[in-house]
Amino acid sequence: MTGLDIEKDQIIEMACLITDSDLNILAEGPNLIIKQPDELLDSMSDWCKEHHGKITFYSSGSRN
Image (cartoon, rainbow, N blue to C red; front, top):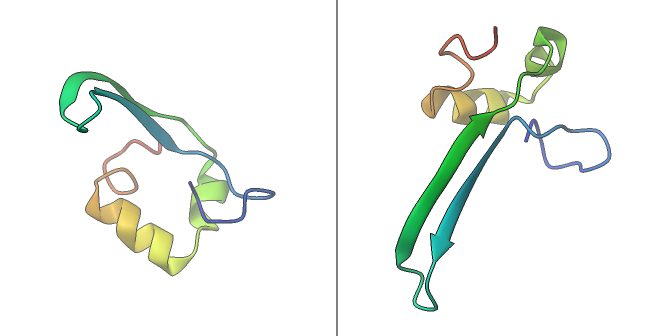
């Protein structure tokens, strides 16, 4: 998400993991990056920009 406010912030990435009752991973689904306009990404808080930069989304060219 671009922040924690579900009324204004947007989803930018989602993933799926299938686990058993002990939370052992049985299957990994797709990890999808959802394209958002640069204006939305630029308006993210500093914390979000730093966090998403660490996971390579924000700084990897995924913005394009």
